[in-house]
Length: 164
Image (cartoon, rainbow, N blue to C red; front, side, top):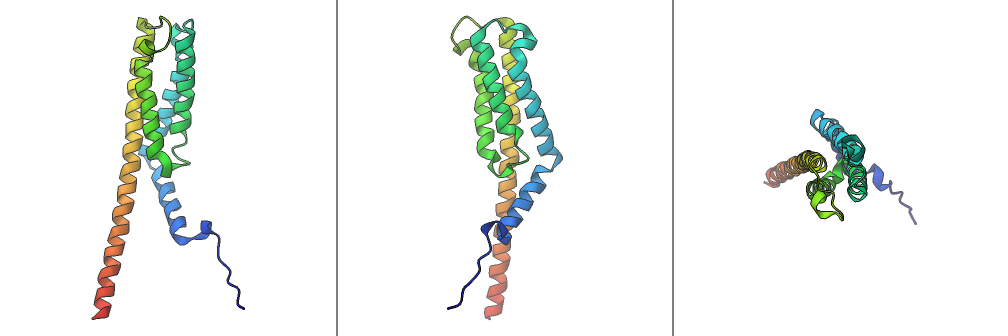
Protein backbone atom coordinates (compact mmCIF):
# COMPACT_ATOMS: atom_id res chain seq x y z
CA UNK A 1 0.00 0.00 0.00
CA UNK A 2 1.48 3.32 -1.05
CA UNK A 3 1.36 6.14 1.37
CA UNK A 4 0.97 9.69 0.21
CA UNK A 5 2.36 12.66 2.00
CA UNK A 6 0.20 15.76 1.95
CA UNK A 7 1.76 19.15 2.54
CA UNK A 8 0.13 21.28 5.23
CA UNK A 9 -2.53 23.69 3.99
CA UNK A 10 -0.29 26.63 4.95
CA UNK A 11 2.06 25.58 2.15
CA UNK A 12 -0.64 25.51 -0.54
CA UNK A 13 0.44 27.79 -3.44
CA UNK A 14 -2.90 29.62 -3.65
CA UNK A 15 -2.87 30.37 0.06
CA UNK A 16 0.72 31.55 -0.07
CA UNK A 17 -0.12 33.85 -3.01
CA UNK A 18 -3.14 35.22 -1.16
CA UNK A 19 -1.04 36.00 1.90
CA UNK A 20 1.58 37.69 -0.27
CA UNK A 21 -1.12 39.88 -1.87
CA UNK A 22 -2.47 40.87 1.53
CA UNK A 23 1.04 41.71 2.71
CA UNK A 24 1.57 43.89 -0.37
CA UNK A 25 -1.81 45.61 0.12
CA UNK A 26 -1.11 46.26 3.81
CA UNK A 27 2.26 47.74 2.90
CA UNK A 28 0.73 50.43 0.69
CA UNK A 29 1.08 54.02 1.90
CA UNK A 30 -2.72 54.39 1.97
CA UNK A 31 -3.21 51.39 4.27
CA UNK A 32 -0.38 52.51 6.54
CA UNK A 33 -1.78 56.04 6.72
CA UNK A 34 -5.28 54.77 7.57
CA UNK A 35 -3.87 52.49 10.27
CA UNK A 36 -1.74 55.24 11.83
CA UNK A 37 -4.58 57.77 11.83
CA UNK A 38 -6.97 55.16 13.24
CA UNK A 39 -4.58 54.42 16.11
CA UNK A 40 -4.23 58.13 16.89
CA UNK A 41 -8.00 58.64 16.68
CA UNK A 42 -8.71 55.67 18.96
CA UNK A 43 -6.07 56.82 21.43
CA UNK A 44 -7.53 60.32 21.49
CA UNK A 45 -11.06 58.95 21.90
CA UNK A 46 -9.95 56.83 24.86
CA UNK A 47 -8.12 59.73 26.50
CA UNK A 48 -10.48 62.55 25.46
CA UNK A 49 -12.33 62.81 28.79
CA UNK A 50 -9.04 63.70 30.49
CA UNK A 51 -7.68 65.79 27.62
CA UNK A 52 -10.81 67.89 27.07
CA UNK A 53 -11.80 67.96 30.72
CA UNK A 54 -15.09 66.13 30.99
CA UNK A 55 -13.74 63.29 33.08
CA UNK A 56 -16.16 64.21 35.85
CA UNK A 57 -18.94 62.76 33.70
CA UNK A 58 -18.17 59.16 34.53
CA UNK A 59 -20.58 57.45 32.13
CA UNK A 60 -19.31 59.30 29.06
CA UNK A 61 -15.70 59.02 30.21
CA UNK A 62 -16.00 55.23 30.53
CA UNK A 63 -17.92 55.02 27.25
CA UNK A 64 -15.19 56.94 25.41
CA UNK A 65 -12.44 54.89 27.04
CA UNK A 66 -14.05 51.59 25.99
CA UNK A 67 -14.97 52.84 22.51
CA UNK A 68 -11.44 54.21 21.94
CA UNK A 69 -9.77 50.95 22.96
CA UNK A 70 -12.18 48.92 20.82
CA UNK A 71 -11.58 51.22 17.84
CA UNK A 72 -7.81 50.88 18.18
CA UNK A 73 -8.10 47.09 18.36
CA UNK A 74 -10.35 46.92 15.30
CA UNK A 75 -8.42 49.18 12.94
CA UNK A 76 -5.03 49.05 14.62
CA UNK A 77 -4.45 45.54 13.33
CA UNK A 78 -5.07 46.59 9.74
CA UNK A 79 -1.64 45.52 8.57
CA UNK A 80 -1.58 42.15 10.29
CA UNK A 81 -5.07 41.00 9.32
CA UNK A 82 -5.82 42.79 6.07
CA UNK A 83 -8.01 39.98 4.74
CA UNK A 84 -10.56 40.55 7.55
CA UNK A 85 -10.45 44.34 7.39
CA UNK A 86 -13.75 44.77 5.60
CA UNK A 87 -15.90 43.44 8.45
CA UNK A 88 -13.72 45.03 11.13
CA UNK A 89 -13.96 48.39 9.36
CA UNK A 90 -17.75 48.30 9.46
CA UNK A 91 -17.65 47.59 13.20
CA UNK A 92 -15.23 50.51 13.60
CA UNK A 93 -17.62 52.73 11.61
CA UNK A 94 -20.38 51.78 14.06
CA UNK A 95 -18.11 52.85 16.92
CA UNK A 96 -17.53 56.17 15.14
CA UNK A 97 -21.28 56.73 14.81
CA UNK A 98 -21.80 55.70 18.43
CA UNK A 99 -19.18 58.26 19.48
CA UNK A 100 -21.19 61.00 17.75
CA UNK A 101 -24.43 60.15 19.55
CA UNK A 102 -23.01 59.04 22.91
CA UNK A 103 -23.26 62.43 24.69
CA UNK A 104 -27.03 62.29 24.29
CA UNK A 105 -27.53 58.55 24.78
CA UNK A 106 -25.47 57.58 27.82
CA UNK A 107 -27.02 57.88 31.26
CA UNK A 108 -26.69 61.13 33.12
CA UNK A 109 -26.44 64.77 32.13
CA UNK A 110 -23.22 64.59 30.10
CA UNK A 111 -24.15 66.59 26.99
CA UNK A 112 -22.06 69.72 27.46
CA UNK A 113 -20.31 71.82 24.82
CA UNK A 114 -16.84 70.31 25.35
CA UNK A 115 -18.02 66.70 25.36
CA UNK A 116 -20.36 67.21 22.40
CA UNK A 117 -17.73 68.99 20.28
CA UNK A 118 -15.02 66.46 21.08
CA UNK A 119 -17.24 63.46 20.43
CA UNK A 120 -18.73 64.84 17.21
CA UNK A 121 -15.34 65.65 15.67
CA UNK A 122 -13.70 62.43 16.86
CA UNK A 123 -16.70 60.32 15.82
CA UNK A 124 -16.79 61.86 12.35
CA UNK A 125 -13.06 61.28 11.85
CA UNK A 126 -13.34 57.72 13.19
CA UNK A 127 -16.24 56.97 10.85
CA UNK A 128 -14.44 58.40 7.81
CA UNK A 129 -11.28 56.41 8.58
CA UNK A 130 -13.30 53.23 9.02
CA UNK A 131 -15.08 53.80 5.70
CA UNK A 132 -11.70 54.41 4.03
CA UNK A 133 -10.45 51.12 5.46
CA UNK A 134 -13.59 49.32 4.25
CA UNK A 135 -13.17 50.87 0.82
CA UNK A 136 -9.51 49.86 0.63
CA UNK A 137 -10.36 46.30 1.66
CA UNK A 138 -13.21 46.12 -0.84
CA UNK A 139 -11.05 47.50 -3.66
CA UNK A 140 -8.35 44.97 -2.82
CA UNK A 141 -10.89 42.13 -2.85
CA UNK A 142 -12.43 43.34 -6.13
CA UNK A 143 -9.00 43.59 -7.76
CA UNK A 144 -8.16 40.08 -6.56
CA UNK A 145 -11.43 38.72 -7.98
CA UNK A 146 -10.84 40.50 -11.29
CA UNK A 147 -7.31 39.14 -11.59
CA UNK A 148 -8.53 35.64 -10.69
CA UNK A 149 -11.40 35.78 -13.19
CA UNK A 150 -9.05 37.14 -15.88
CA UNK A 151 -6.72 34.22 -15.18
CA UNK A 152 -9.65 31.78 -15.43
CA UNK A 153 -10.80 33.40 -18.69
CA UNK A 154 -7.31 33.18 -20.20
CA UNK A 155 -6.99 29.56 -19.06
CA UNK A 156 -10.39 28.67 -20.57
CA UNK A 157 -9.52 30.40 -23.83
CA UNK A 158 -6.18 28.60 -24.09
CA UNK A 159 -7.83 25.26 -23.36
CA UNK A 160 -10.39 25.97 -26.06
CA UNK A 161 -7.60 26.56 -28.60
CA UNK A 162 -5.91 23.32 -27.57
CA UNK A 163 -9.11 21.36 -28.19
CA UNK A 164 -9.33 22.41 -31.85
